[in-house]
Length: 415
Ligand SMILES: N=CN[C@@H](CCC(=O)O)C(=O)O
Ligand SMILES: [Zn+2]
Image 1: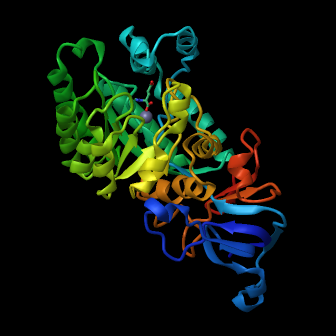
Image 2 (image 1 turned 90 degrees about the vertical axis):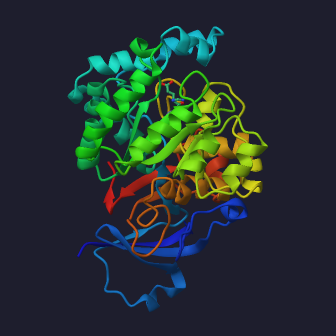
Image 3 (image 1 turned 45 degrees about the horizontal axis):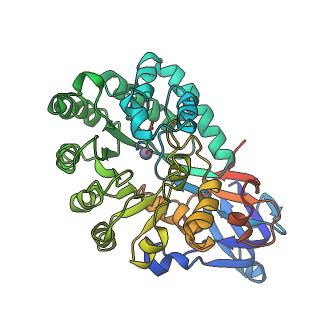
């Protein structure tokens, strides 16, 4: 059996025998072992501890020993909110934004999501797969070992199914853990601008039955936002998805107090995501729920919006995850290292809180915490091995540097 032993690890990070979802104060507790060893067999973590316990661990000598002096080893990032499958970048809109147009104004001119939808419907499944595959390889090198990917740039029956089939193929061919989310309710297509119920009927009667039959998605998402889908429409669509076993994960409270958080909580959503615009009622609803609040700071950064109130949410006792929102319109980067940097710098999260939110709570927001998100015996060997670094806090502190030396996904080196 192939085994690898890492020795002399400066710090082994997020080591847990139990891995509950972390909320409030618990987020600041990041268990670590200094001067540690870590043993993996095939694709699985089988032992770890302090170096002085290695002799006692009573294991046969592994086939490979790697000296990790000066380096940190931690679980790979669990990025629980992305739109990784898209046909083309949108840097022209970026220029429009630099010239002063708002996100809503660009959307009203047929840009934004509708622009991506036009291009996606013209692209072939193979083209979309190849583009998404390239992005996934890049993100793996940046330490992402689990990722959620949404549809939502099709907005037609054929387009939405094409996106979900691309995600299915990515899942079949990649060792990265991938979860698929159906986001047919991302916006109203032009032809349904005055006929919202018609598009909702298309989602419920024509898209969901095929998605259910072919098991193309794990989750259902709705962009619950003023000018997009109302809380009532969101609930209707999510309930229809739930009939096919899809659990809700909702775009909520990005641009306005949309009611998305309360709607998501009432539906028992796995997560409500974005949360740039929160009031006391939304914070209270989230704090009292199992639902995870997923913060997407790079989207707030790119759109020059106020950052999510991470401190207030944590102090209120919410469970917080961090994700990239990688998409061509509002977050054209899937770099989770940057997400973690930005969460500390702009949202005042402590390094420990940000690392927990981007690993274990991200895994919970994709319901894969039984296999990923911490260094635990029996979990997958999905590991980030850093370059030599002075301390853990150096990771969010030194923004812009690539501190990752190697990434392991299910026991194999990512190349
Ligand atoms: N807010 C809605 N959806 C995406 C943006 C999509 C786009 O602009 O293409 C988001 O999460 O930010
Ligand atoms: Zn999104």
